[in-house]
Image (cartoon, rainbow, N blue to C red):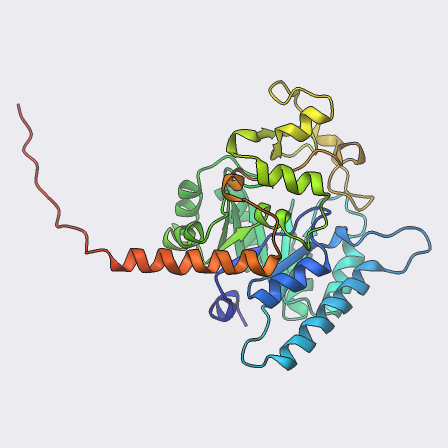
Length: 336
């Protein structure tokens, strides 16, 4: 099976992006049952000394819940799920987590912060599909050269770690040489934006921030409220907190005693994923967010959010295809 074999079975062509701390089995299962690909970072399954392997417990729960749902709903099965692997050299759990994901035959693998052949091989060994997230054409080429099946184009405006390129520029550059699957990320919070992503050449939209404001999300109420109350002007782009450029909520930065308009640069050598965290512990109250939050009006169940996106998507399709054909090219006289 390829990623494009999955797309027609989805309610709408959307992947729920893996959210640091926030994505958990409740959210993933709800997303998949609603008809989109749900995902979580492997490192969200945190562990301490003497505790059981939490990642395996999460995969068991997700697999069994979706299997029960599919047996009860054979005509409307759940979408597959995805696990995000941080492929940074400081992720000391990576090798073990790859083995666990292969054991449970995770259907979709999302890789970040590094493209490595052995990670792609681990996914392919169990029939998994690998989508690697990239912020520019150079990284996209490296990912495909090392065996990724598809790409997640992380454009300007995406929540958390994000690129600075326009989605138009990023997708069209990749599409010049790559005809495989692409998911597009960057300020997508409405169904018509999902259709726009498909229209410009992506196979699916990659949506994260909107799912922070859901009942299943493992985010504190203050974080969800900040998403609902905020807009694009409340987002700042900084590399201070992890050494990688990303978008964050200004009010959360101000609440931590810093000036969001005057942040220093970070030292990339201090990135640390070895403890199961993609951010230093001291920044746990600095909250990531994409620029699309201006249309997020309330906290809702994940299924309700997916239904809204689907309704907007179909309405946008109806508007688009009910329009008359574009007029023939006109010739304009140019005055001397």
